[in-house]
Amino acid sequence: MAWGDIVARGRSFAKRVPVGLGSVVVAEEQRRLVIAHYNEITLKLGNRGAFTARLLDNMRQALAPLPSGAVRSQDGRVTVVPGSADPEEICRRLAQVPGIANLSVATVCEPDMDSLLAEVERMTDGWQPAGSFRVRVRRAWKGFALESPEIGARVGAVLADRTGAPVNLGRPDEVVYVHVVRDAIYLSLGRVQGCGGLPVGTGGRALLLLSGGIDSPVAGLRMMRRGCRVDAVHFHSVPYLDRSSMRKARRLAAVLARGQSATRLHMVAFGEVQSEVVRKVPRPLRVLMYRRLMVKIACRLANQGKAAALISGESLGQVASQTMANLAVIEQAAELPLYRPLLGMDKLEITDYAREADTYDISIEPDQDCCTLFVPRHPATRAALEDVLRAEASLDVEALIDAAVEASEYEYLKSDWEQQAAGLPEAAGREPVEAGA
Image 1 (cartoon, rainbow, N blue to C red):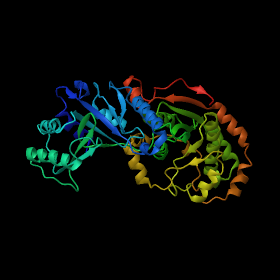
Image 2 (spheres, rainbow, N blue to C red):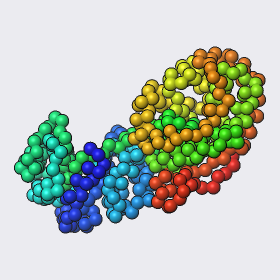
Image 3 (cartoon, helix red, strand yellow):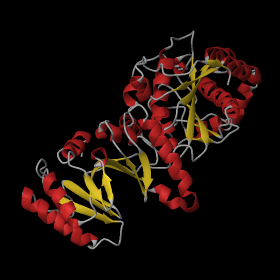
């Protein structure tokens, strides 16, 4: 179901008088909630509290630019009071926060069937199923008088009577959700799929080799889903090429920041390193040498920034340099674990993921990436490690790494949402650039 459909249909039964929950009266602004559910966190047993606390912090960070209300953990779910913010926008933003399985916009009812059925009747005043429907009930509070099948049958009967829509328990066009807890019943239409996984900050810190292409930002996002806090390093060839790839890297880092706090982005001038490789390394081995030196420089920066691993967007067989033999040669240069979360994905899968994550349109913009500088027409596809090490011995590798790290700069990019809210120019929401790591 589309974002607009879910929220527009929810608006039709959102504006109601306050509801009493037992002895508690819920204010009008709390009659409607955004509810976020998580999956993997429930498996963490003794550490569940720490994982949930991290998720709440990340959610508040993502919603900080919006005039939304309280974010609270309640019995295996997280509730967000929309305040004056658009619930649709809240869902859109939280769907990109790792750790959230799904989201819904719910109306809060009193914990009894009369209140629920009255709300269902009001809901049908402005809503008609787009075809068939079913009711899905979760009865978290076992003390409720009716069991889930009975609740579903009674709600379904009201919906069928008032809308004339057929019931389809197998493949319905619409799903109405009823969630019964001790002090309330939540009624919602449809759900928004979250990105799942674990909250960022629970899986350690890693450094992403961020190009301006489609693959590397997706690799970073997928590792964020596993709880990794992702820093990034971008290699550019200024002044041999223009600064367009640097601008793209900043914009991509700002998208990564949506699911975590500000993204630390290193900028490394790589043109001089490439020039030295061109002078001393045989033409077919140059691309592999570039990759190895990038990995070595990234390891140095990762160690200085207390990152425990590197992340690369390489996919097996996607380009000539990404054969199994060549990937092994590149990995041999790494002092830290080198993670390749896209290794088994094809280009279509990666592209689809990039579109969903809002990085695709940025990635396809033209730029002058360092990978286009001094690239041989026919790079080696199955290089032998001994040949590469022999060629590498002609370089003063440590001097090249030292110079690149010494001249590197880093900055902290806020999310593009925060930048827009502050009225900043694109990719300008960052702290001052600093030399070194």
